[in-house]
Amino acid sequence: MTDHDEKYIPAAGFFSLAAFYDPLVRLLGREKQFKTQLIELAEIQPDHHVLDLGCGTATLTIMIQHSSPQAQVSGIDGDEAILAVARKKVTRSGLNIQLDEGMAYDLPYPDEQFDRVLTSLVLHHLSAAARRRALEEVMRTLKPDGSLHIADFTASDTGGSHLAAHLFSFLNPHSHAGSIPLLAEMTQCGFADVQAEGHVASLFGKIGFFSGSKPA
Image: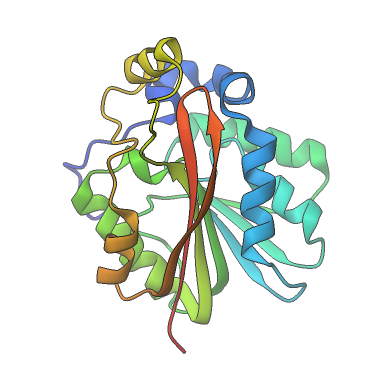
């Protein structure tokens, strides 16, 4: 890590909830729908090297590999407990997926390694400064013409389910969900063709899709 004072927020807000993260997201977050849509928007090709940034328990990572069997898929997360769950899931799947421990804002990869970077419900965990560094790291590790594809909470007209919103705030009091100016931040970090690509509703609020590419 480059900044030891950056507070790390584990999945679901508490390290002790790692074992319950998958069922919680499935129950309240319409996980399969929005992750399938994120993969489709990324348009992954057979020869691509793909990174799942903040892979959590590797649900999205495994879905990416199933959808593109010939692609090279890696996942990275800073939560050791969550990665232990992820490694068990990858072993059970029989897929050849590399999982690494590391922070989004200090990626342990060389320049221009990935064709696609996907990230799901991760960036709202980060402070503005850490999120900017994470976007800069994605830019550094993307190949020219590679692209970043994000699914994360966005502003909602209704605020989502009142009960679910309170539950989410309790589980993760440090969240910036719904208040991140992602398109502006991506543009400031040098991404081109930055755009919002719709959203899906969940009990926690709207999950929006965002993308941008590294100029050739």
